[in-house]
Length: 436
Image 1 (spheres, rainbow, N blue to C red):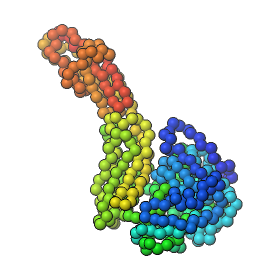
Image 2 (image 1 turned 45 degrees about the vertical axis):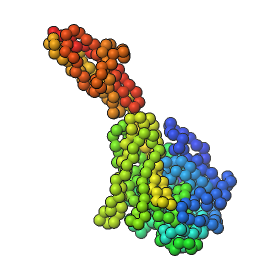
Image 3 (image 1 turned 90 degrees about the vertical axis):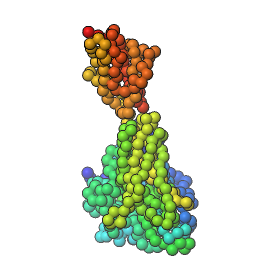
Image 4 (image 1 turned 60 degrees about the vertical axis):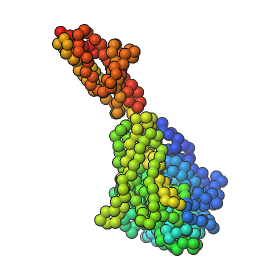
């Protein structure tokens, strides 16, 4: 694909039926968001933010909600116009060349290349404890075409002058060349043709961490820029309340999306950070009506990494549809939340061919046995009736399974079964038991 200029896609287009929570909306400083609004949106437990300063275009800073990127809402900083972030991904080269300068500190990360259209958010922060964290997702229109091709769009979190935006498990800075479809793929989500955002790809929920001196003012600079040219844009999504100075565990699910069937549990592995024996914590989840969510005990592997397994089980009464599963970790004074998208697929029951109850002829005085084999979404509930299909006046007590054994057959008798699941019911054909 040739690099090219394109117009900003600011209109929200819906390509398929999707719940309202998934649609991303943005509002920029140019549209009225203030630096105080950004500070309030970012401030999380145990932190006080002050002296906010913006460097760059007023289009490059703003707030967002939705998008199913693992960050439900917060602050967006872009190397172009934040409106470009709004999905779906229907433009191969979305971006705005603002014609602005780069950033010298970011130039050092991508040297010998240089940066363009830099945007930087700076502020002072005071933390309550010795921990400082930022929760975020990095997204770019440079994915996948321009990985390793000199257009290494970059951002950084400078904490007292030191960049703490590091690729997990390494010392490499987070850029499109360090997390992508070729390397560190467990932290990358491809979005070619996706509906959640215009960007071609984005990282999983990541976090930056630093030991700090509590109750002392520290300086933060969050900066992002295009590399090589100013055409295709990148952005960093900072979680609402995601700048924190307390010690609730951070849960990072290794899947951003799950598919559920009824009464069939789905297990989602997750990394866990900041668990301390002296600080009690609790994990919980909500967002899917009628579902049960449990967490395995946190375990440590040989390298000292912590993990848990989140087990999600949709109940029989959970409606079919798409949901945002909110996963919470809490301590006495802190809470953190991450989200994943859950799809519940429910197909009504049905019977075909030999799956129907089959008429039988048995010796007089013997019993007949009818069995049905439904397809659809389990679990199923069964109720057998005497009479012709659809006649519900004579339910048979205790006949609530896929197999029904008749009383002793002395005269021809008619039977049928109604099969029900969470999204519908189906009446079988009438079957007859006839004596010889």
